[in-house]
Length: 430
Image 1: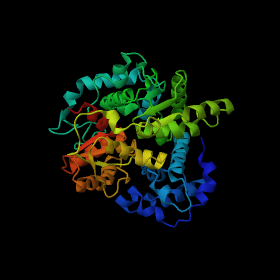
Image 2: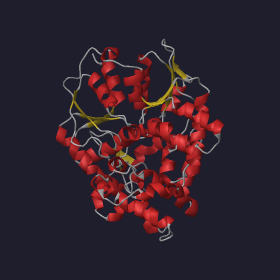
Image 3: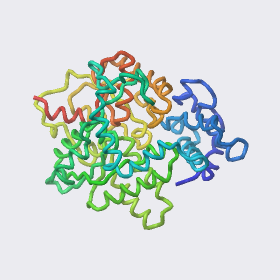
Image 4: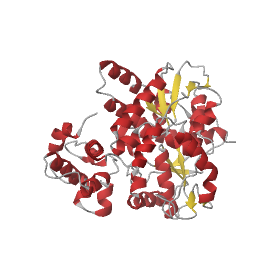
């Protein structure tokens, strides 16, 4: 994994032109130079030159970034600001360490069936004591003050039975197909602990393709939350664990219904394990070369068609707008495939004004900077409302959580669903 010193040349390519300011979601909220991409690059440059130290103020600006990549996309010199910010955060972790709670969670995510799994199961059983369901909403509000949970935050309910536990009852091979194609499914934390219905919908659609679907036991977090915080060591440990778990199943493809996870498995694993020697690099390339986001896999390799959905009814009366997750469109260049899948459902698709504008989630940014996160989200919620759509679809469970919260605050009744859920619903139409 590259360190901040390895980015000296990339940092020098920033000519402070300010093109990034117009697309930076954090700058658009607080309008301060240090919040812009070029301001953050200037801080990294000053740190490397010894002009500033990693003070609380410097780290505040380094962490006030959702890593959406809009700046890099607009930059005439292709300065990789998100990578530079992650490297600066990693420098801070090496110098100052991580908060105890973050360290505790990251270590135990490497063994999801142990403490974290038991804690989530216990929390799911008692969540009704601490949270109340919001009528007509897909979420909960707290009943009384709780740490890290703001009073108006719409919290998604935890699954009473995780996706991996539920699907594990059938063994690792969930369905045996006829095409000879073997697909490994990576659940990810959001699907596993919070939105297992997305995993169920994925299983249904993948099974329909005729492929053999394998959900390997022992898989854990993809490591992207750790990497975003600068915790490179734990991110690398999680990458190694998942690599070993999936390698033993003779898979043609590895897929996931989380855009953040697919970006991590496809791209970040290479960076994390690049310095582990030639043999490891060969293994990582073999694994990463098989990774496909589920929308990419269904539309391209599996060539799903409307006829495959064999629903008797039509979604012609439903208007759907689509939000591009940053990790999917910018991170992986996947834009058309999710839209093609939505069109297969028979729904009427209506584009919002800025479909690839960041929703403000930013991984743990939503937890550590909640009000800031929701200020970024306001423009996304208004954009969706203006379409008049019945459903806002996307391909990232984290974006679903964030957009539901934002739409709730905006007083909109728009449903928010994953693209694969729309496909699975079409298969059930009568």
